[in-house]
Image 1 (cartoon, rainbow, N blue to C red):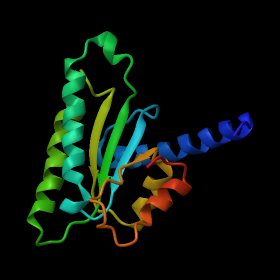
Image 2 (image 1 turned 60 degrees about the vertical axis):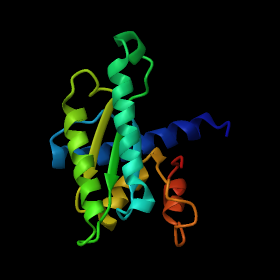
Image 3 (image 1 turned 90 degrees about the vertical axis):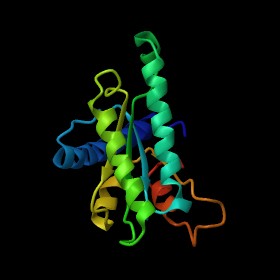
Amino acid sequence: ADDKAFHQKWRAVKQENKAKLAAVVKDIFGDDVPLNALFDIQIKRIHEYKRQYMNVLSVIWRYKQLKKMTPEERKKVVPRVIMFGGKAASAYDMAKRIIHLVGKVGDLINKDPDTRDLLRLYFLPDYNVSLAEVIIPAAELSQHISTAGTEASGTSNMKFQMNGCLI
């Protein structure tokens, strides 16, 4: 824990992984995301009990709080890039609505000149193992907020933790 050289190397690896994920965001959305931002991730199958809807509501709340702040207050805020990813069952209407909501909220937030340096929101399409291999090593905070007792085995949190992510 006290090895400064290890801390520097760990941080360099994390930054390299964040740059790889930022390149994916650039390819998909054309946006340059700030690498100094906290990468806040929720990737999993889209379902009400996994609480993606609650998470996007918290993003809306965070955005509204930023809008109320003075420029001086905003200087104290840690920048955050929030990314969702996952698949939805083709007949699951609510899951499709959640994905649509994330996209629309992201459109608003990502274009706002007042907050775009402090908050971004993206839904990464076509989530699969190859994309997870880029996302998970770059994550700094992973939203594991499913309703208690509903996860079958809950091993995805281990993948995040093994890559130095907070849960």
